[in-house]
Length: 542
Ligand code: G16
Image 1 (cartoon, rainbow, N blue to C red):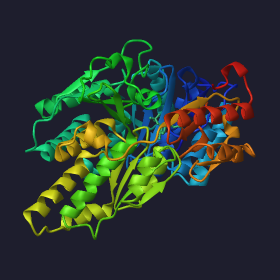
Image 2: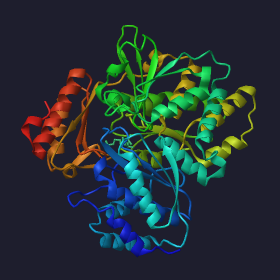
Image 3: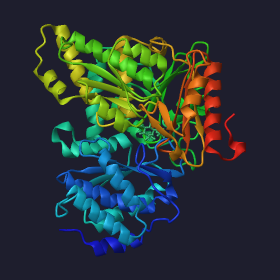
Image 4: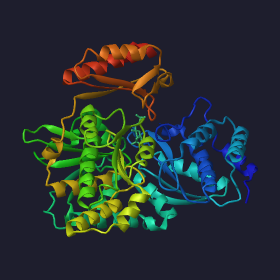
């Protein structure tokens, strides 16, 4: 049935756009304060339905979350039929739709999208949606459903769930051979593969999991039941209903940015014990351990990428497939220089702008693409050809057969749709079990360069424009040159500046051979950014 524009206009009047705010589909969709998002969610309902119609009525996903951001924030991201992020060309449509000033203008934008993209609106539309534990989620879901209803689309409610589960459900709904399109299917697929991969290995010591007081808690609780004694999980920071607790002084983003153990875990991690932190929607993972000298040691996305890539390369060799399968790595500018140096000596490495969508795309060019952001967001992709190669391969020895079985099980264990903290956690545990590594051996693969990440609040972050995979600024004019001159003064120095796509801030990253140098470089660059952008001098980074 073609769209009924009068119905859309009437429903849209109930979800008017605030006049003062301009929305932008950023690194991971729309993100801002939860109470600013009602009109956006209504319109995303319409957009997701149009996307489904355009994609031959395949299911589209919508996840309502602001992930690692504070609890009062919220956001929404769209998921394409194969479980990957929304195609980049549609981000502009999303932004235009979100910013239409009135219901009339909204109808014009919808009409424009239908005509330019050539959408057959008589097709049925199917949208699978979920949300995290944020209090603002419930009313945003209601606004979103109004959007679906206004265009007659079918909605399937995945309830309160993690981002990676939502991605899995979308892919499994569209590709029958991917797995059962249910949460049960998700956990069964992953844990069956895990159990086969660690069968015959020594008993695994308990793992402490910091759930960030977020939606990862309930998924980790279910996972714990499925795993039983195979991998005992100790769940911490599980207060999903305590107001303000989400991501506060805990979780993957806290660990990465402060390079510290969450205070709530002090005294709970024994020397030598491993732990890990999820973020607010369980798509990022940071590992850590406490050394014998009781020092906190962080094992971030770069360390995970290194561990996993080396393991996969070994398995490919052992299975006799090294001439047919090329393994590559994708990183961003945030990757620690020491990790990039270590990896480029062993494998092809690409650098792309921040955002899983960019990494995912780049990883698809390898037979097996390992991609991780330093913040712990990442996964491994096996190309279609690789899957066929694995299926056809006839091993010559029992050792080759075992390695082949392991790779095939990895393709099931790993959530290939998007970064998935729980699936990545099991992947890390498999590698540690096979290598008999503790955190210490893993950590010693290379030594991180000291680094510092600083946020600068500026009047308009859009004044900061980057190039070269965000490693250089082209605007404000002249600032990059001054940064270059400053960097030269620090032994092993590197620094870059980029606007965040999820928060209203500019980020500054710096590293150097010495801790004091990395800190000083970061704060001096942050000061330059602040002076350039102008603003309240009491908030100047020091
Ligand atoms: C999102 C993206 C990540 C990105 C992060 C920070 O993560 O999915 O790829 O690294 O934001 O982005 P920015 O520096 O642009 O704010 P999440 O976990 O918040 O969805």
